[in-house]
Image 1 (cartoon, one colour):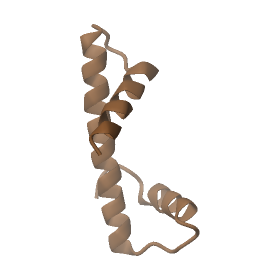
Image 2 (image 1 turned 90 degrees about the horizontal axis):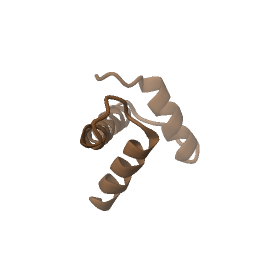
Image 3 (image 1 turned 30 degrees about the vertical axis):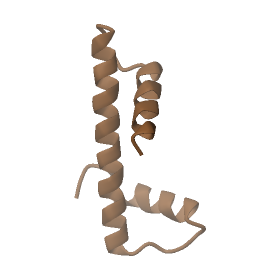
Length: 73
């Protein structure tokens, strides 16, 4: 597994999934998907910060990365 805690992802899936239970394999896939998205988000945000010659990710970098990633879906 990855770095994202299973319990956190399971709690979010249950909360936003109408209280349904989550199978182990579904949880593994959700964790992998979340980690993949966060990885892409970090790469895009990092690119934005580097373009602005900063070493710190700012809210605007995350917002721009989210907008770009959301357009790709």
